[in-house]
Length: 318
Image (tube, rainbow, N blue to C red):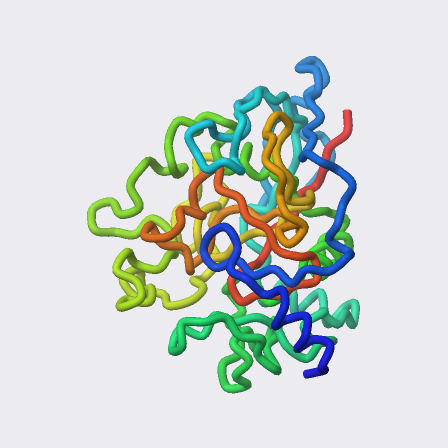
């Protein structure tokens, strides 16, 4: 590991807003924008159906509409609520898997930023701390060459830049926060509850998403059956047929992490980065509710972490 990377890591690595989010601050993550501005369209401009063919086995058509974005009962960074009219779009049913990403790498010869740096970020539970681990990459998310990532699990240790490169290769892009929240909340119909399935994390002694159990650090996630990531689609989909919209891995979003319009918070430069949604297997009710519908987080665009992945969307123009 270079002295420069060691210096950057030692100065700027920190646990961000929820679930141990790590941010390596660099100038590339700065923006002149003060707010996350959402363009609301006219209802008459909503595309009612997708005419062009698309892979129905992989993507879902989400009809646009009016909904309440944000959460006045959430954390400060989730306020204020605002009514938004959103255009229809297509979204991946599942998170991008390790196999999906391997196919992309094989076809494009793409090299991820973690591979270029020679390291990536891992939470080492034995010492209860984040570490920059040499050799950690999308294939070996823990940096251990004996622990290769499983094909049907979500790909991790991919930066925002890597995720966008994959999306663009597939003629797609990353979802904005407003698209993500609209899809996760089932077109806004579930905004009056914590999760898309209700308000309880455990129902009939069954965990509804992949998350570390409430008696962390003693259980380290095994109560739901998985210490780290779970197979994509293992937990139930929401009513729109979209899986893993809570827990498993945080999901990169397209936009910068900024206050919503009307929120007069000033996010420090150290917290500027690309937005993330959905929470991860690290989230825990004792210290975060990252898997709530309105919860948000951020990390710098070049950071690669073992609990962050992504899915793609395809925008539709009227």
